[in-house]
Amino acid sequence: MRKFALNPHRRKFVPGLFLLVVLLVLNACSSDNSNAPSTSVNPFAPTDGSFNHNLGPGASAHDFLASDTYTQLVVEIQYMDGYKPTPDAVSQLKTFLGNRLNKPSGISFIYTQIAPGGKSTYTLDDIAKMEENNRTEFTDGRKLAAYFLFLDGGYTDDTDKSKVLGVTYRNTSVAIFEKTIQSLTDQPTEPQRYVLEATVYEHEFGHVLGLVNNGSPMQTDHEDASHPHHCDNSNCLMNWQVESGGVVGNLFGTNPIPTLDQNCLDDLKANGGK
Ligand SMILES: [Zn+2]
Ligand SMILES: [Zn+2]
Image (tube, rainbow, N blue to C red):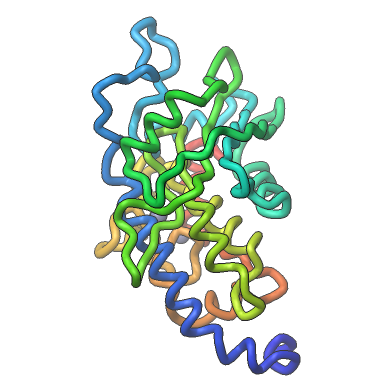
């Protein structure tokens, strides 16, 4: 109500903009669970029985959620010049993880700037190679490691009408198309940057946590039949049909980042989460 009265002009712009954003998020999800990159070399697949970082999205959901094996999480953030995630968005992600993961020894973030990729768009193979060339944090002892790569370009499947914002491509690995996010959040009529960033980061981490029906078994059937591994609740963080209703306004509200609905929360709890 308040935002409507204060800024009807902005309100007027929301639906079209949001539809665009929705399509982007949707497309981000259309590929994020399909398969791991088809690299011929798998340096993250150990032969000595230690943690395997080269599994598919959601394969390590329990390890992230519970504390029986891993009590600590380190998220390694590697970014290209100009595409570092905003502190507010990372703070939101940290809170999101803290609320869901049992990590009594803490959740921390490590930042490293890496060389520009220099491409306008990237394939999954490109992304996997950059991870293999740059990643330094790996699961060890009681410490679990996740990897977030922030790119200076878009995704190979991008079109004029839809662009991918993030891809969860391995059990501990996420790529964020930060340049695309920035391009959608640089106008006053567009969402605040940290809101769109946090929405994408949290959504992708939801896939790392096995949502929906991809590593964290469903306690109640709520997978969207048309969009595998997404939630059928239009207001849920893990939904991609957010064109309608409340979520549109929520991107501009006082608490704009979509949250997990009860069905998604129940799945995470049943798999060892909070
Ligand atoms: Zn998704
Ligand atoms: Zn849900």
